[in-house]
Structures are given as C-alpha cells and as structure tokens.
Length: 458
Image (cartoon, rainbow, N blue to C red; front, side, top):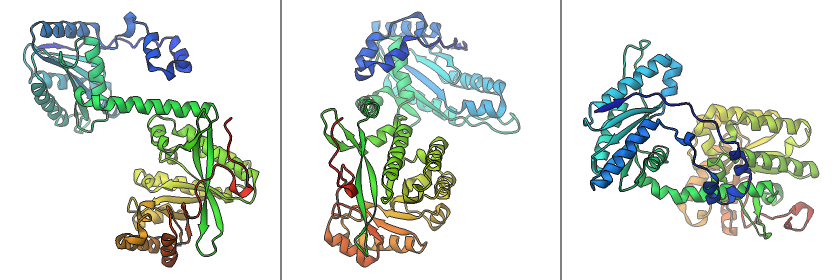
C-alpha cells in the first residue's frame, strides 16, 4: 500500500483571456473555446506527484494488456463538519477515513489526498467488476464512519465515489482525472458513479447548454415577448384577466413558446434573469392600459429569491395602481420545497396589493394545513385532470373534490386546458368560477384588448 497525504497546491489564478472568451463568439461554438485554451504548467488542479503516478500506472497497464481504475472519493459535507467542529477535527476525519480505505486495498494501490474534501485512489490491477466491488465497500466505510468523542457528538459523512477504468475508458492521467470528476459530479442518484453511465448524459448536457445559450442570446437581442390568453368568468362569459406567456422570436421572425426552455433556464442559473424580465414586461403592460389585469408565472426558485421580491417591491412602489391588477402564479410544488418561504413570498405580494394564484392545483395533493398556511387568492386546477374530463368519471370525481376543497376555503377556482364546449359545460355544472383554454382563445401574440397587430421581427 502506498499512502500519501500531500496537501493540495494553491489554485492558480484565472487567465485574463477567459472573460473575453465568455463574452465572444466562443459560446456559440464550444470547439472554439477548446481551441483557445492553451496548455500551461498551472493547469494541474491535483498534486503533480499523483498525476505522475497515475500516468505511470496507466502506461504500465496498457503495456501489460491489463486493467486498472481510478477512483475519486468526494465528501460533500466536510464544510458542515468544519463549521460544527473546526478545522482540526475535519483533518482528523479525512486522515482516519484515508487509513480505513487503505486497509481494504492491496499494497500496490495508491491513496492520496487530492483536495480538501477529495481522495484519489489508483487501483493498478482492477477490472470494472472488481472496481465496483471496492467502490461499494468504500461507500459503506463513508456512510458508517463516526467518532463519538468530538464535541460529545457523533460525526456522519456524506460522500460519493466516482470511477473510470483504464485503458477501457481512458489512456492518459489528465483524461482519467477529468472523467472521474465528471462521474462524481454527474446527475446519477447512486453514491457509486461510473464514467460509463455518464456517457448517456453527455448529449443531454450539450443540448441543455446549447438551449441555455440560445435563450440567453434571445434575451440579449430583445427577442423575448409576451403572448396573452384570456381567463373567462363561467357565469358571464366575460374576460376577467389574461395570462402572460413567454414567447421567443427567432432570428427569422418565427414566434414560438419559450415554455420548454424554462426548465433549462432553471438548471443553468438563468431563471432569475427570465423571471425578472417577465415581471418588468407585465408591469409595463399594466402601466400602459389601466383597464387590463394580467397574470404571469414565476419559477419555484424565484419564490425563494429575496432579490426578485425586492425588485417587484420597488417597481410597484412607483406604480401603486398596478398591484391590484397583477396576479402572480406559483406552482403547487413550490410549497413542498419550503412551505414557510413560500408562505412569506405569498404574504409579501399580497401586502403590496397583488393577487396570488396556485397553479397546477391537484398535481401535488395539497393538504388542508398547507392550503390554509399559504392563503392564496385563487387556484388553477391542473390541466391533466381537465383534458379528459367529459369522458372520465375518475377525473370528474377528482375535479369536483378539488373544487369543493378550494371553494371551502373561499378561493376563486380556475380550470385550465378547457379545449371543448363539452368540457366547459361539465365544469360549469360543477361550479368552477372561471376557465382558460383553447375553446375560449389561444395565446395571442398581440394585445387582444387593444386589437393590435402581431409582433414583428425586430
């Protein structure tokens, strides 16, 4: 067994040209980024001696037509331990963990501290099935690690193990380190993660980053617009308000829904920009016409973002007459993330004079306690229960139950995805307050209440 506990060298400073690459055309062509990144001595983020040992091992395995593996053990809650018990305790934990892992390996294997919360393990003779067994044993050690004498409290570790096989999946040290890092940070739910599994994620990752770049470019070029769909009062047939929906104008002038890009925006950290932009656009529309009321959706992430809440507060201070005509829609899943934060978000908007709607009602099976705590003004029944309402007795029973549930709290009810007259008639008989769907009107790319023409490419 070769055990090394070498401290990590300081991270080299970022190159000055990195910022110019991000702002330029390289984002449109990932290969351009690759071509512009030079090789330089400071690019090794792991100890050089470990890289050299790994390279030597890989080349030896290739020469002998054998098989080996690189494992990366990452402890994700080390910061929690440092915060709770201090630096010295965290170092003892990592040292003891390394010794415990060392005990289950062979004398020719190498264990080394690579970063503060990471251990690198080189298995010089290990086929994929052997590596999987060792990785599972390591995770068992991590999950059962504990010391009872630190601040009279036991410690618990949370970690993952990534693996890459050589020469089956890699033939150089740098490539092996990159691939095992990808495995550790992949979307796999299991604590033992192989690079082989991450290959399936590669195309999806490229697609998501491409879509995020496409959305960001449209935002910068001001090619994002709003479309409007009416919400109709069941008793009178009058339009109560419109829902503002995000639309994207292509460079050729084609208009399409941006809805499919919202999950990508959330994952890529762009949702704050998008939700802020939509909020500002809706408020401007309400300022433009004092007779119209508009609703718009916000992401679950936004319900937890105090910066966004501060932003809408400032906008409404400048236009107090707008708030009463503004409806903010949150999804039912938001309250399941953090009910207290969501309730604070709702109460804050209502204190400004806004209305708040709970979208996708029924998808998360909201309890009486949750609905009472949230205190929204209206609920929108999830369209999945409305589409087949006329022909599904199960859906009819469920929708009627939801309506009675919501109306028992004195909430205004809205049925989404009303696409036929038969569905509308059934809902009216059930006592729904208002309806939204293609039967009453598709989202229009212009202000229908002003009879304006459609958006033009700008």
